[in-house]
Image (tube, rainbow, N blue to C red):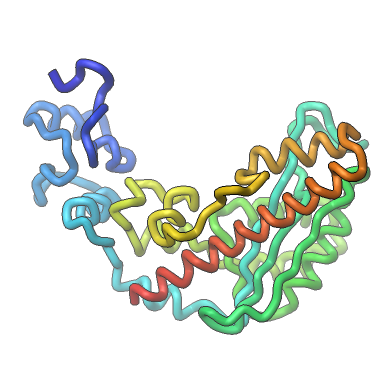
Length: 274
């Protein structure tokens, strides 16, 4: 039968892709032999978010909420696309840091005057030999200037800035101004734009390939945040010679830069849909 190997194996657009589908609703569909999203009837009791995913997959076309346009129009130019990388270790890398603290170690910022017109790229990477969070915070404030939206993907950046505010009370006013300018692209996507290829998820690892299949991390020495974090920790622990470190730092900067470019791409594709 259908569950011989693994629940949902071999079925495309399985109802498991409906986000937060309750056991009760699953049992109801199961009882009717419905396992594919496109077979779920239109009147079936789904939450608003679930309905959007159902619509997109059933019609094989994005669900575009009428509010998408105004969300995108609220973005103030110049826009700064910001991405942090962090390092987290069980044994602290520096004095006065608790185990498992997430330390921001680098960032990339792309500045655009309008969709498609890049006017600057700023980046920072910490010296692995010492705790550089103060330096990172100060340069971040300078690089982000004082006006224009700061576009991030997920609440991760906001949480890191919150930590910097707690660490450096004298920078709190400037960092709070940065927070006030944040625009979370993931939140906009979650509420206003659902693509069938997102498969009910909204992480950038799902949305970027669906919206910009030509954009790739292939051939990159460092292609994910976990690897980036591990390499930084190894450098801080003195595991590499200078040449190897220089090469890793170059790779880390390249990876983080690609992350913010990915956000630029996602924004461009969203704008094409309004």
